[in-house]
Length: 117
Image 1: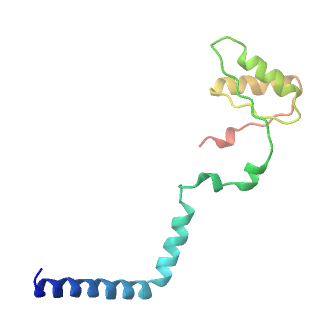
Image 2 (image 1 turned 180 degrees about the vertical axis):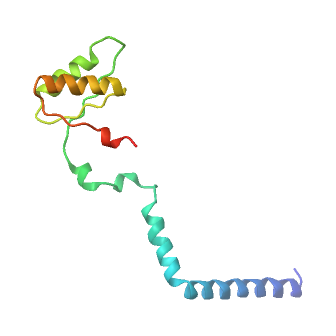
Image 3 (image 1 turned 90 degrees about the vertical axis):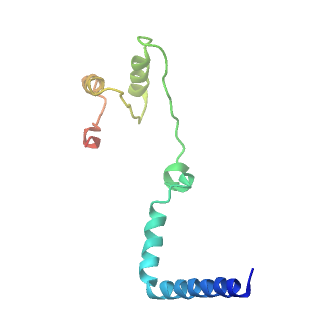
């Protein structure tokens, strides 16, 4: 590399360094706000989210099986016997049926209707 080429690279690096220093000093508040907002949408470490909820001990029962094998029936019977529980229906019509059936046997229920946008 020639002396002129080395001088040009050094000058470019100096300009970049000075521009970076100026930008960081001039936009200090904006950079801090950007970093704060960026950390709020950082999806790289989901295991750190909802620490209180993750610390809660719970039992999750997942019913899986072929059609007409009694999955819903068994889930609802277990829910009726439980102190607390959640039933998530894959279909809205099924959710309405389950809601009505549980209310008929006086199981205290609530609807997740408000979750639908």
